[in-house]
Each structure stands twice: as structure tokens, then as C-alpha cells.
Length: 401
Image 1 (cartoon, helix red, strand yellow):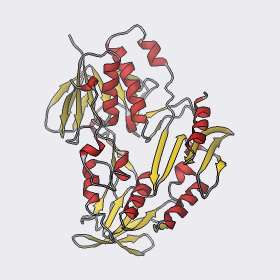
Image 2: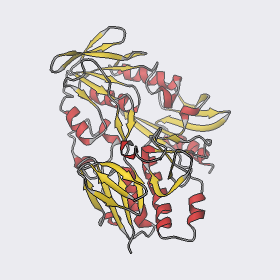
Image 3: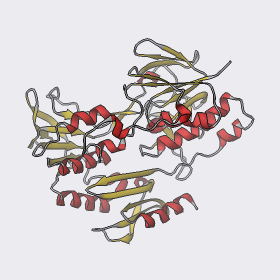
Image 4: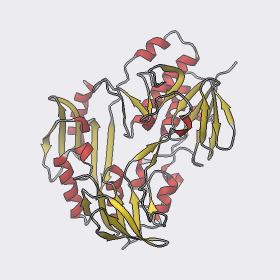
């Protein structure tokens, strides 16, 4: 009898897992369950170049390759529970899907501020295509935009809004924008560049409330200061979409814990055969750095984890002789991230956030540059602004090639 795989999450990680299953010889039924009504699309451009133009699904949609032409898409109906013993996923509409293999790819959703006067219009997040469409309509010249959060998305939205002629203030509890991946020196330089384009910063501050009745008119800082605002973009952090797993014994304390084969792991440390995790939810150890399991929210991780799961799960379902050997192989993806802000191409590899020191190894701080990041004098990351060829040399070092 033909085997079947259910993939919960119809975004990049789930799509890459489906492609990899086919590439590795799995010929059974694949069903992809997604909360959104859209077919898979590329999320990173939503806060960058796509937000600066007319936002459409066509602009960001992934081309569906021949390998997944026969995939069954069940969209607009999220999974609400799973019975790991009976191997059944149930959705919000009450539909049930049996499986032999399960791929957990349900991803993240934005965290929003819990504010006393929070139930007014003008609040936005940037995670989905519909989010971006709604925000784009309000980014008109002269609009007063407050961006809460100074990570990747917050800084990208700030840059895009300024390019559209908005007045932008960035509010963050951090001392500098993007300080976690960049370190203090480069983060301070990034702040200078944003300010040179007209962005105002209120750092080391949180937001305590909003003013306005039906629509936002201002943002109240924890200091009591009020900043006029027509739009609030909340880019502060994310929640893991694991509620549908709450009745299982999987370790969902921070995403979903996974072993080196990306099999889901229970709270007592046992790997669950036939149940795998991909994308932003996957919390796994990477021997390139250490043995601490971490979630990594960088753009290449859905692809790398999807490929890994496709190979291992197809071997498991076919009872391949090399399954145990394949599952035991170390999984060592090199985290990769990029950001476009005011024409600056910021590109990074590795885990700069784990560094205990950093060093400007090429270029100039006020221009194009390469910053290397070290832990215990071992290179663990690199970030460049421009200077792609030089950055790639350090990428090779990180990979040991």
C-alpha cells in the first residue's frame, strides 16, 4: 500500500521538504496543510523591495517545480491537533488527514504589543502577504510611521517607509538597531546610516500605550513621551505556531526540539520516528558551533532543513538499508542572512550573535566593510556591507573549505 506524508505548513520549509521527498524517490501521496489561502511565497522581500512597490502574490510566489505538481494543497484551514499514536492530523474545519510521515513546518507568527488602548486601527505586522498588502496601503508620503523593534524586519520597514516619503521613528528596547547579529560597533554605524536618511530613533525604550479613538494618533513611550503616529508597525519578535501540538509529548518549549536527523524529540528526550521538523520551528544542535540546540530564523534554514528531512524521511518510509547511517550524519547548515536597506547589501554567515569579540577585517566602517566575529578566538561569523567577494572568503573558512 502506498505511503502518505502530511506537511503542516505551506510555506518555504514545507515546500522544500515536499520537493526533497520527490527528489529522493518518495512516490506516495503528499498533502500540504496551510493556514493562509495562498500557495507558498517568499517572505523576506515583504519588508524590503516588495513593500516599496505594489504588493501582489505574483511578485513573491515560488515557482512550483515539476516534483510537486501532484501535491494536494489544503489551504486556508490550519491544523488544530495531531494524534501521534493514530497518526492523524485534524484541521480547524474538522477534516482529518492520515499519515505515515509527518513534517512539522507551521512556522511563526508575529508577537504584538499588549496595550490598554490597543484595539484601534493603524497597527500592522509584516509576516504574511496580506500583512504587507495592508501596510503598503498606509505608507503614503508624509505618513507618520512608528516602527516598534529594531531587528531585521524593523530596520527594513523603516528604510522602505523612508524611501516612500514617510516620517519614521524607530522605537526599541535595544541600545542599537540590529545589535544581536551585528555587535555594538557595526550596529552603531547602521544607526548612523539610518539617521542620515532621516529616521529618528528612540532606543532603550518600550511602548506602553497608544493614543487615538478609532485610529491610532500617537505612541506613548514608557517614559511618558508621546510620538505622533498614523501607523504603528510591530516588529518585536515572534510566537511559534505549536498550539496544535499541545496534546502531544513533544518538546515544544521553544519551537520543536529535533535531533540531528530533524526528527521531533519528546520531553523525555526520545526521537519520534516518522515525525520531522523544518524551518523556523526546528530547534537543533549545529556541530559547526557547539552542541546547544537553537532555533535559527535565517532565510536558508527552511531550505536546508527541508532538504535534510526529505532525504531522511523518504529513506525511513522506504525502509532503506542506509536509513540509520543517513539519520546519524551530522547536520551542519551554515546560517545565512541578508538585508537590503537604502541600497546597502548587508550579508552575513554563521552565528555572529555568539561572538565574544569582533574585528573590522576589511574596508572602512563608514563605507563598504567586512566584520569578522570570534568566540574563544575561533571564527564563528562574518558580516559584510558590500565587498561580496571578500565576505565569501570568510564563508569558506566557516565551512572549513
